[in-house]
Length: 304
Length: 166
Image (cartoon, rainbow over all chains, first blue to last red; front, side):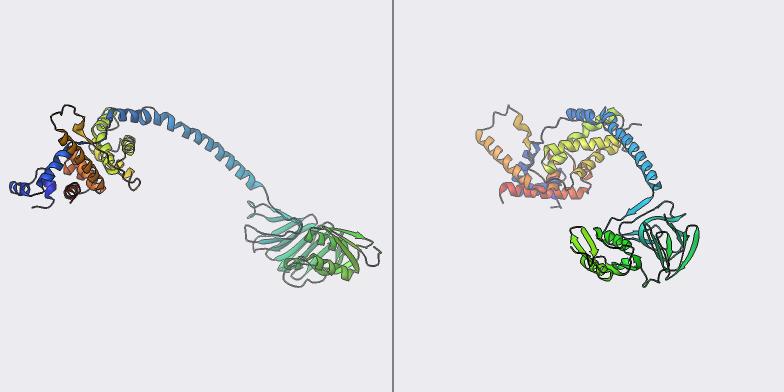
């Protein structure tokens, strides 16, 4: 018998000899019955006309042109409006300056488009134009910040006390009410104050308190002490020391019977309030009292 | 030049092949609803691509689309077939024993068909019910005629074994 002879038998392709042999076999009757009965089988009803009508109704005659295209057009219209709005606001926002602000007891680090870095001390604010940065490297500063400037075009820091211009260096600018200090840690910084330009080489500081330029000593280290969580002062009036204390710990300082014009030299830790208070009170011979967010400094010999 | 995009031609193609597409999917999965959906989807695709499919290719196109639709997606259910002549009322000359036996045999055949591998069942039923030649089934299933003959042979063998209880 040839291969797949059952299939060949069903399709009438067996030779006469093979057919005779197959008919003689004992399973022939079974196969014959299977052939008969299976020829009378039927699949479930299928109404081709109805199916075609359904197809035409749903997909061909009207559906694709009216129902499925229109919502998409509407969607396109909405999408176009949104795209225009987005593009418009994108360009508008792009022309706005970038702003970074720190609150009391907060620090922030900003990386500028040219990879220059700015570290913002507490209660400070910078703004600059990201879009125009390539043409004009200018930062508006309120408060205190340490700058690591990447080499390139002139980099300026504008404050209400004066302008600091550099080419590529590391420096600190502190611009508070009545207080303006610039310290250069690397390279050369030029400070313009009252239309007078002062060149500041590495290791030099420019300090102005209450409109008067004050001689100050050479700072130690390669970055301002606040970068290492310490605020240090050399012959600075107490009022500025207290102001810094308020900024670092987000507290209210009040004073009683203390001359805040006394000069203070020393430093305080920016993470531990009690330690910081002691660091101020001991050299200035004052006492302090803590009440929640309020700290009262009073003269050492005052009766409480 | 005739084109499937012409509605008359499309209707003709539909009437000629939709029943076989329906049966084809039904034999595979035993699900009437899916078989009906397959017909709709296959012919919608044909309509959408009518410019690219010639009337001669339309037949194999719809089989391929229908087949691909449920590839690996649905599990086969029981294929429930009918006796075509059970609807004929005038067969009164059969004895009750004979009719009982026929009924019993039909149930055995149903069970045996459901026990077959999907491809053997589809081949067997396309031939027995739709009268498709092996060559036509080979085209639908995209295999050789010899492979179809093999499926048919194996299908007959296991059906008999199942029915005779060997």
